[in-house]
Image (tube, rainbow, N blue to C red):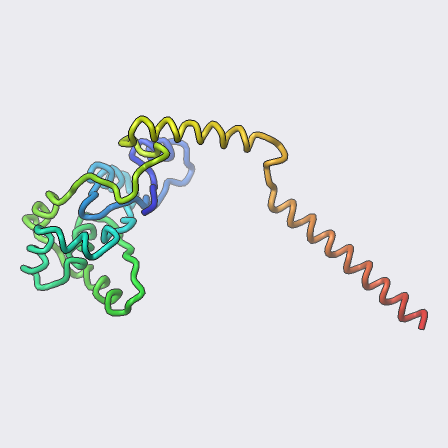
Length: 199
């Protein structure tokens, strides 16, 4: 799942950006719902996009009693209900699948509108735990050691990229290479022309 922006990061970005962001892709699934961040995004016209909307595996979903209860009552798969949960609350979902039957089933989730009671029941499934730990202190919820490591990493990167020879100007490098290739081609053409005349 993509780390995306926290509410504080998004607010700082929107205060300085000429063009406000249209989406914010973050980890959002039944077991990590991030209600506050979703509400923050929607209130500011930024569409939240669910990274990993199925929480990685079918097993994680089928182990959830509330989800299974709703899926059984609706006569559909737990995946479809999990996707519909985010869709119903205004979150864009992009589930990953290579099997055509799963892709078709995932698309059908958009027609499943959950009731207020079902949303409340599924809302209680939130475990507040990320699939991937925050080891570099990006999020406010990171532990102090991760925040310290992230700060150290930022200091090192800032120092390394402040050194002039580390900065790469890819466009200038490409232009220089094109000029070298052009000069080599002219030289080869002139040499071939000379060789032809000498014959």
